[in-house]
Length: 356
Ligand SMILES: Cc1ncc(COP(=O)(O)O)c(C=O)c1O
Image 1 (cartoon, rainbow, N blue to C red):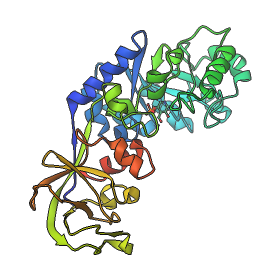
Image 2: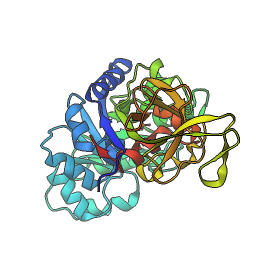
Image 3: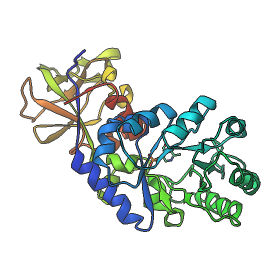
C-alpha cells in the first residue's frame, strides 16, 4: 500500500550526530541505540551507516537476531535481556549480550549445556523500571562471575530517569547509588542515554548509550533550540504533497469539530498526511511546517489522512512538497505542539510511512 507521505533518511546527519556523541564523551565507547527499528529510521540501514559506533543496543532478542544476521561483528546489547531458555541459547549462538534485570532470568543459565552467554547486570538506581536492587549487586555479581555458563566479562549498567531535567537532583542521586553499589567491583560500566551524555558529564562511563540524539532530536523536554545547541542534524524528513489549495472567508471553520475559525479571509492548503501516517493528531492549530523554503503552520484538527495548513503569503501549488518535520522544522517543535516527545513522532511516522 503506497500512501503519499514519505520519510527520508539522511546518512550524513546520522554520522554527524554519532560524531557529536563521541566528541562530548571522548573517553567512552558508544553503543548506538537502534531499537524499535532505529526509532523508525530503519534498523539495518542505520546500523550500516553507523558502523563506526563501537556497538549497538536493541530492545529484544528478535531485533538482535536480525542485526547479527546482517553480519555485523559489533557487540550487541539486548536491553530487555532474555525471557526464557530459548532466548538464552540464541543469545549464545548469536553473541548477544543480554541484560539481567530480574531474578526470574537467572535459572535459565543453569539449564544451558556448555555454552557461554555475555551479560550486563542492570541495577535499579531509582527509575524503578527494570533492574536489580543496588544492595544485591555485589552478591549477584559474585554468583554470576562463578557461573560456568556466563562469560567472565560482566558489564554493569543503569538507566537515568530524569537526565533530561538539568536541575533535577535525581540524576546525582542515581549516580551516587550506582557508585556505592559497584564500589567493590571492577567491571565495564554503561550509564548514560542521550540526555546523560549531553547534560551530565559525571554519568559518562566505559560505554554510553545514545539514542535520540543520533536521530537529530534533543533529549531535553521541549527544548526548542536543542538540536542546534548540540550540533545535531535531523536524520529523518517527513514530507507529503499539497493536494488542494482554496480560499476561505473570515469566520469559516476548518476541519473536524470546527475547532479553528479563519481570523481573516485566508488561503489554505490540504496536505496528504494525517495521523494514519504517524503525524500527531494532537498537533492541532499552530504546528510548524515548511513549504518551498517558507515556514507556515497547521490550522484545525489533524485528520486521518490530511492536515490543513495556512498558505497566506506563501507561494505554493498543488503537488508541492510539504515538510512536516526534518531539516527545516525540528521534530521537537512539532512534538511540543502535540504535547509529546520527538521519540514518539519519529517511531510512529518512521514505522508507518514508506521511505523514499
Ligand atoms: C536502557 C536504555 N538505554 C539507552 C536508551 C537511549 O535513550 P535516548 O534515546 O534517550 O538517548 C534507552 C531508550 O529508551 C534505553 O531504554
